[in-house]
Image (cartoon, rainbow, N blue to C red; front, side, top):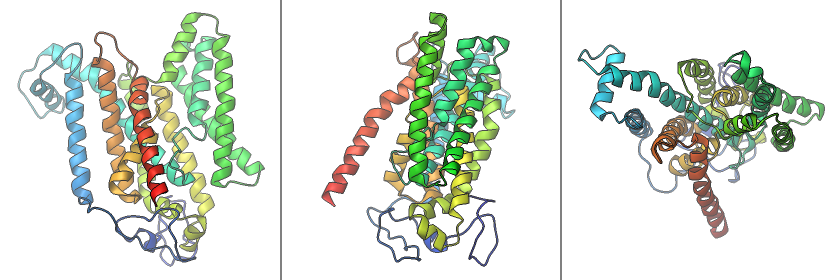
Length: 390
């Protein structure tokens, strides 16, 4: 990762270890592609011709902006699309025409924080999922595979069950974030004690930790003092953006932007990891350090999001799959495009949650699961069918 990957046998210093032969082309070969030992394989362009990366990124970014404006216009109070644009331009000081005070209140103070939080959370979760899939070289990995989401859930449930949340609204996200960091630390400690920090070991530790923390959550909820505590805990565990406000956006924006940028700058390292540890070492990467930094950065990214939104599933699992099927496995394009698609997907899911059966609102996590699970099933079946036909 940038700033943490010394080029052991590279002649040029810098923040990134540059596996030039790995990242020289437009894509990266599959992890099981045959290569010459000690030499990163030159990527081979196959399949239909893809659109230029810049045009693709700009097009998706414009589409995400349109989705956001539509999301700001829809709800129990419908606001015309053009009026929403005028409110946004006025808020930026770019438009001086009079706009309705009520429309400004609804768009700027109620809906805009929710849309911005969905953008940040969707982008962060998609990038985290993409990096974890490269880390474990496993397309089934998601942001919570190392137990970070479960750790955050334990922290939140403990606060709800003990009534500590009465001390202030800050207590629940703070406890959830600390729980996420504790889970990440537990994975690292077990890896150190076992003297084995390979992806397989960390994956197994994460699975065991998820199971253990799930049992803890179940025990706390089943022994809750009243039904309201149970309802609050279950509501948080399913993930929702309904109570989003500007304080939530402020608490998420810095860790999401910093950690996401950090991962994006490490795209070349992720490309090298796809080829295996031996290939990555052959181009001068300190694989152990890269994996440790990547795990910590991803844990902070996911923990900061889950602490505010609750556990929203399938964004970090499905979005990288869909994007990878379109643009290939080169993380220099896969990561930013996954961030854009993840942001747009979560905004769209949250909009559906708000308007699908008015005046009742679904939880955002429910919609992502309803949409993500069948899409993921289709993707898995396609992968297995392609593998069988190979």
